[in-house]
Image (cartoon, rainbow, N blue to C red; front, side, top):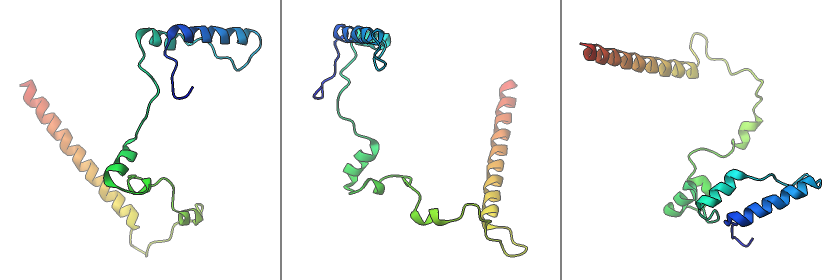
Length: 133
């Protein structure tokens, strides 16, 4: 209590044993003995209480920003207007004869990735060939 953690293995084992007696008496909320935790306490588990600061909060402090939204690299929620779209609706049709913009960007990305993989494959085969000589 009051920010202090119980780090005494003997006292902790006594409390676990007391809970086991309570469980035998019908207490459904009593916890079983956690031998791994007690062993950790025996070996000298450091104090487990303390203060923690995430990278996002540290970045807020260092950049003197007012809200966490200013330092997050991704949005926490979708914009409200995005929820108004009907997810079952068909996408808008592209002009006749023209591929949709997203599809053409997607194909360019896939083609670029394939070219990069082929280049890596050729380099790997060259290294293997040189190594086996």
